[in-house]
Image (tube, rainbow, N blue to C red):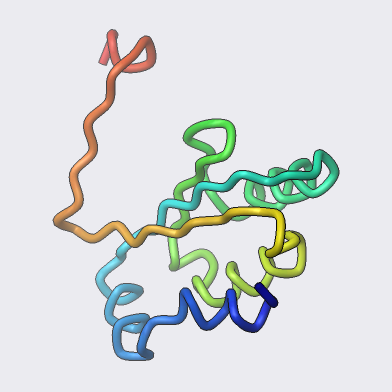
Length: 106
């Protein structure tokens, strides 16, 4: 898959992009990177623009970086033929449950 094909797969209609950003929808970004150098580079970049939730899972606030800019920057780092990056839009109706040690004392 080329970078152009990857870009078109995640593109939303402009009205949906603007609506989600106005309403404060956040994005969950998860990835699996085949090469250690690209993995480290993407991890450093994501640490600058998002909140790390797990090793390769981040929470992105679109008020800090527009989602299309984020995607464009990620495309410059990854190899779309080897790596897997997924973005999930979280709306105000999204719910989160947690299990494990980090939630025991909450």
